[in-house]
Length: 384
Image 1 (spheres, rainbow, N blue to C red):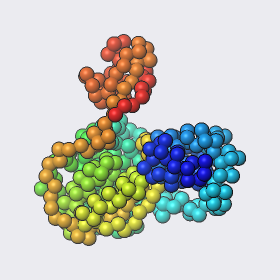
Image 2 (image 1 turned 30 degrees about the vertical axis):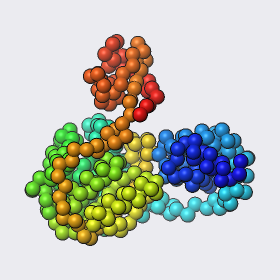
Image 3 (image 1 turned 120 degrees about the horizontal axis):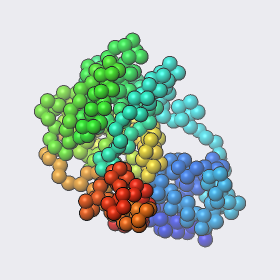
Image 4 (image 1 turned 180 degrees about the horizontal axis):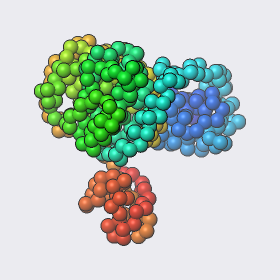
């Protein structure tokens, strides 16, 4: 095959939205690294893990990739990328200190990360139906430091729309390290998960951190007490276009006049990013800085455990308030799949969320198989 036909064939076989360029991105990442874990290749190419895995299989079939302590180019693959793709440079130009994040956690703040890690180890289990996937303590502290650096903390009224990432606690710990003072004029967390809010309240009380929490589902109109009462909001919403639109709209409704937003999201391909940027424009939000790979997650393996952070400025908020949202919002609602599991003990098939079965595999393991009580389950092939 010629260069275009190989890349196109792989893109077609994997139904890759990015087309041939997405395949080339995987090859480029492996070429520059010499040998690379699939997870790292997915991150470098900004592709979801299942997509990167599918591309790897096709490139192995084509004889361009092989597995040697991770992904490596075969001799034919190396010849291909150098001859047909014109690659030759293996220089890593990312900052060796901050890895391109633009924020470094100073050594004197490292104990804060360790303290935060000890706290979040006691957090409740994630609720995947709410798209919860907590970021690492390092990431939570980097977000707090970024907010401090950009004037989004000191003297500001700060709103967090959802906080399974425990950024509110990172802000509080950072203030304590800065002379034991509250950096802000108040931090409020709004979340639909009372378990998460109870954990945050308890942790804040134990650590002497000032924090307010509000139990509220953002699909419902924002409470009057929260409207036009904040200078900054931070959010890591469900990774769907409607999830982004809803959380950003509620955040804008909460801003007093203009203001800042730290928006964490998946690293989507260009066509979807164009749709996301249209949402920004519709809401009067200007992109100030985009930080790819800024967020690292303990879970979210589908995303390669990595996401981007986008700094937004509310320049010309629309002022329109969104009524009750009753459409699909979370990933499982927007992209429904039959999530089937087979009991390893008796062979019974269980479809999550059907016929009285729990909604998550974690809940299924806790409950056990209805037929035999077994707690080990094997994932079956997904079907639309």
